Length: 55
Image (cartoon, rainbow, N blue to C red):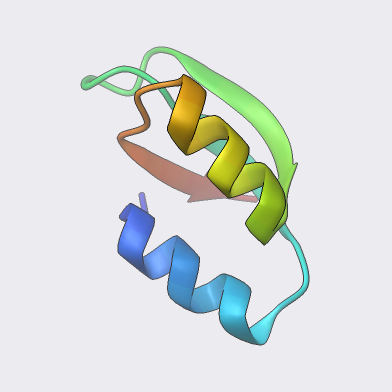
């Protein structure tokens, strides 16, 4: 699982990331996304995010 800082760094070099945005501390709840910088900002303002699991 990647931290949110690692996701932000990868999005600087890539246009989009595919995977699961983890929304629970134990990793049981997640949202499948194709993540861009704008979408990451959207989710960070509305949902508590704990990490990202890339495909």
